[in-house]
Image (cartoon, rainbow over all chains, first blue to last red; front, side, top):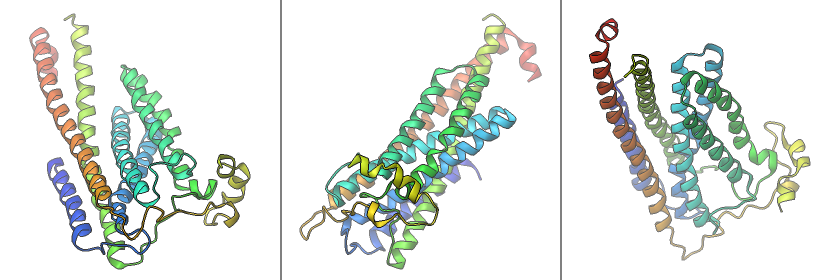
Length: 223
Length: 92
């Protein structure tokens, strides 16, 4: 599928999710009231940020085994999209926390803190990429970092089982059919949009790589 | 509080998959603490959806802009290389 079409379908699905939230799901939940509506953007971003960090880790392992430039670029693009999804998760989660619990953040909540640590870890990954110019060396260093950073994914998912629950629940149980359908429709919509962004970021990183090669060639011929 | 939540004993006792955390280790959830009959959640919903869409839009805009800038740079570098070293570019 061409990237433009993929991207348009992604946005269309996300807008459809907004439509379902606005016009189809019940506007109130018995405990959380209207604030539960934030869940339909919070959950899809959260699940997809874990997906993309896991993709990045698996591709990093592949890169360590095969050392192809493409695998390094796909892993880096997955981290960039994962960081975006994680940022959306933190922003929507923080607003929901303020609405539902009366606080923006809790430093003792295992789920919140493990997600924040994961976000900072992947920002460090991007910072590491920015500090190394030579593509082969950068690919090797980032692949090791990406493979190790993947440990964050199960840690975030099982944080509540491991460290105990404070505010954030292990899972939010939806009682009505409309809520369940919208929740998974949203997850699919964001997956389509984020994979389109993943392809777009890969194209940017590929262009950067080509530009680096051309600059190197120009230096070799003495210009 | 920290010592209670980040307890190493809790880690070892609850690490088994599919096993629920022991009730004694849980801090009671305060879901709905901000809710009340008069609570107005609409500003929170507006900001959550607005900021999420804004972040996605800015990321897209940044990516599209970067793609076109890099394409221009690659064309320029190819042109310079073609002028300096025509044989090398012909091989490509």
